[in-house]
Image (cartoon, rainbow, N blue to C red; front, side, top):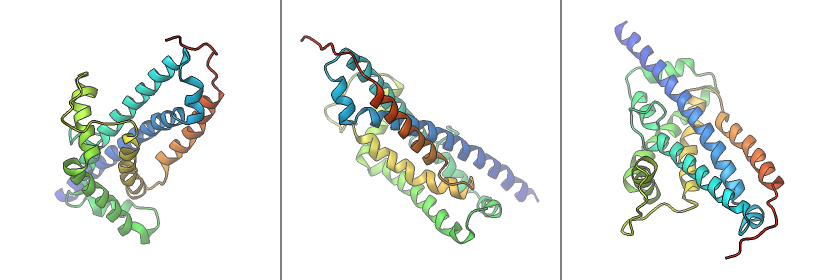
Length: 218
């Protein structure tokens, strides 16, 4: 009975972490979709070398930072963060937790093993990426040096994050969040639905925005 009660407590903690991760991912996708919509050529052509371009550039930088902060919480922060994949992975390893997940699983029963395997593979890849993936390692440095400590220094001896690297990092998040939502939260496409909605919102916003016609005089 004691082991059963302990497993129930761990399962409830797992559910809270999974819900936190889902909420963090939705907010991450919101910022990312607004960012990539702003970077489309038909949008950027309207803003480059205009006064409104100053605000456009500032918004893009802020959106990128918010996107990278969200990704960092998910894939870099460890067990002290209640919305990190590492916290989720640690609880999934605990004895008895998987059995309770299976008891509460309401999706296609035949898919349980596949989704469990897909989730674990994504989490294991993430552990390896932190050691070997150039873009992930660059994010770790960027998080530590800039996002946390606001250092303005850029090292020329290491590979730094570049515009566009956020797309690679988003894919890493997506590989884990989708099976997690299906397996643990018993719902599919929550975060992706938010992403699709804000993709349409962002395109509508940027396409409808017209800067003034004044140009910079350099």
